[in-house]
Image (cartoon, rainbow, N blue to C red; front, side):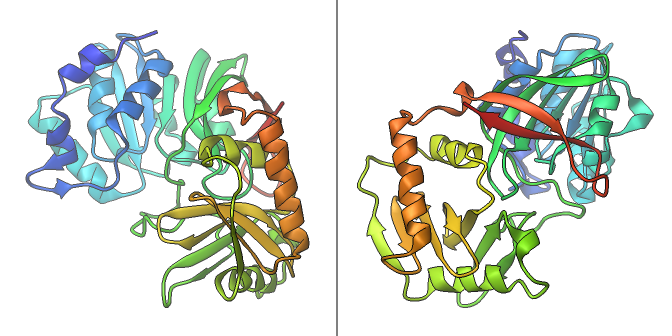
Length: 341
């Protein structure tokens, strides 16, 4: 695999993330995580590489260093402000092998394809067919993918394309901001699959995997969110501190269509079970909330947590990944990622 550290030593990170002309950009990932993904991407000199999510421009600069003067990097972002600034900073540093474009990265960028490598710093709703089509035979894709139809349930997948077919070689803990059709300014709210939200007196939201059963007024989602926010039964989780990456992956892998995710408290996610009339979730801090002490959803949630503990709190990397062709022919073409044990 490519060693990223020497390339990172050549890039002035803060010149990108905290440029004196633009100021700091919140649309950036942890540099150590960027290094991890690029190590997995296995970039070599002379390659043609695409990145989806320009951000501060730092990851693009790393890729430009890795491909060298004979390679090319194409960086895409839906936010023209980020693209313009990254282009300027690259120009200031004399980089001529990277081009930034304002575009919807989920559609790829066929003008500069095929790509030897493709990396995404944003989470699409599924693995797009066009990404696979735009990668060379034997090429690699490293991207966060959803493992359930609710926000923040992702793993980072390493995908090899052979004969036009994608195969997942490995998954790892991680995730990035949801890919959206327009620039995202509210970073506190997921960009996809929010079924109801409240903005007063404070931001709160809910996502239900069973949204197709709800009515056009989102009565089920509204009811569930209201019951979790007002006069909810609360209790502490009686197990050790919640290992969130392990728990959320386990909950997603259950494949239960009653899976529910919520943001009830600032900076705390919650995962659990809900129906149109009952709900129970556990927050990252270990607090369990339910519509009532004898809630049927609370019984289900306790059962899930018991199964998780009995399974030994498995790490995301221990699951078996599989790609399944998406859907009903009405949505975008691609593959859904699901995990099993």
